[in-house]
Length: 157
Image 1 (cartoon, helix red, strand yellow):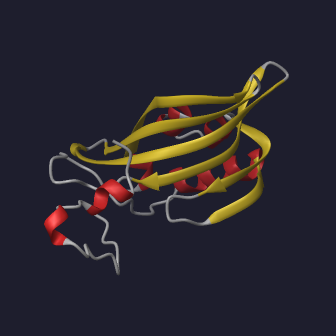
Image 2 (tube, rainbow, N blue to C red):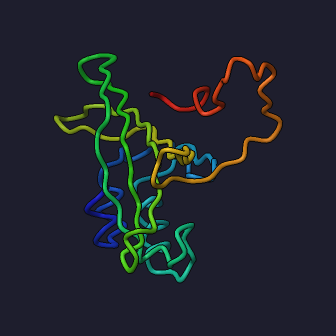
């Protein structure tokens, strides 16, 4: 995925996915049973477009670094994989954002493929240099004495 994204190659990006898979876009859009070809086409359209990214440049100018954070094997051929994603504007590397990607991967014919994918922004915490700023409507700290941080409810430590 990383090589496909950074080379702006939708087909290479989608090659990590099963022929048919579920995909949840960063904005929460759910695409059930999307094909690898449709995934490749839609990513290529994003790379080729002049659509503005959340970082300010167009999507074709956004680089990405992926790091596997955790793998949990459910069976020898099925795993849940959590991936840290760092996106940055190539013309201004100080403009960056963090996502957390959760995938379900299945080993088929000796190859691991993504069968379910969920891309979610990571909320910027005060101590972080970067991240998405998210306002959670309706969330109130009912007991201010406990100093509960709302981020603890939504993000792993």
